[in-house]
Length: 212
Image (cartoon, rainbow, N blue to C red; front, side):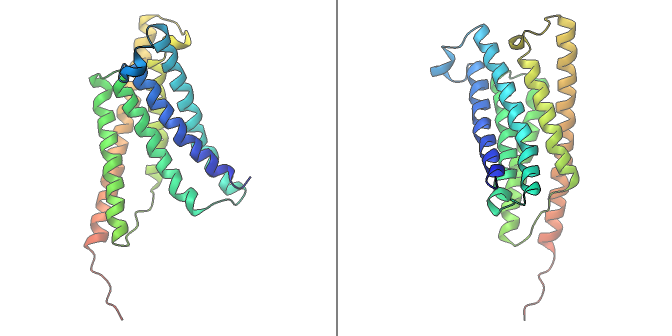
């Protein structure tokens, strides 16, 4: 039971790769596979990617809850958990770009990807100077908002694959709502990135305490 949290985190990494490959294939970005997936099969594959994404996102809650519930926290889990979160977000973002490269989603997705890679690089620089960047409460909510927004975009993309009503007005309204959520996630993501950058700048510019 103590290994279950890490197993869930590992499952999230595997599902992230599966989500990306499924979306890329449905979008025609993998010639060796996309030639075999056309028409309804493409929508079905997108629907499967949405379902896999939801399962992966749910594990983000349960691995942490189980680790605290059974006192199974570990250094490996502490390292893998945030990595798995970023991999899932990046996999879904890149998959959506391959599936539907249109401006309403490409720009906020690009901003989210830029921030995630920039903050990861910033953490590496700070770690080399023995400076830590604690996760803020807003950053935790940022991850939740990202997952909800990406899930909404995936559901919009998989609409026909689930056999949902094809009424243009309904589909358009849901797409607008998903795009709005994604832009909100991008704004919050940039805000938290700016906060981390300012925090790192203050810590790195502070004079080192005298030795001895």
